[in-house]
Amino acid sequence: MRKILNSNLWMGVLITLLTGLIIWAVFFIESDNQKIAVFAIVGVLITAITSVVTVNLSTQKAKEKEYELMLVKEKQKVFNHFFNVLFEIIISSKEHRKTNMPLVIKEYMNFKRGLMIWGSEEGINSFITFDRVFQNLSKEGHLDENEKIASLSVIEIILKSIRKDLKYSVSDKIFLTGVLLGIKEQQILKNL
Image: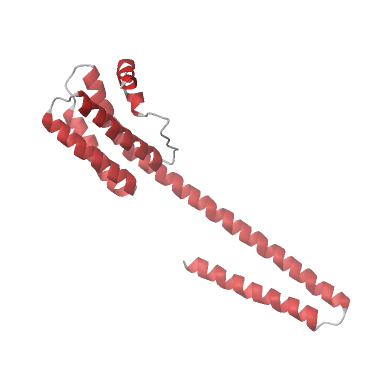
């Protein structure tokens, strides 16, 4: 904040100086050669100011971009925990084996912890919806077709929210949950 105030102060001083030089040259200097010399100095100062401002702006933009990339990397680490849980559940279901619950619980808690710090408001809200739906579904045990479709739509919402958080484009044309499903399940969903 202090740098911004200092740079604004210096810019104000330089603009005042340039304005003063121009007024002085126009109204108080009689000789054309001296006017040309003053306007040359003004031109040099304007060029210098422009180059300094350009460098400062590009440096500021580079720092913002670097910060944004750092945020995306941290978010990727957090979302990786969610994907570890999701894929463990899917793979164990397809292999007809018991889900590795200690791994799922550990990864799920790591995801929650990271989401509180690095998640966007939309990401946190979509996770809360996801968590609520799956808490209710896990209490009931067996899922009927409507509940399966509802769970897929909730997964779709959180996957799209994750993509938005990672600065990817999201459209209704793409069905992200379809990537998780096998060919048979994709056909069933298409027929609905």
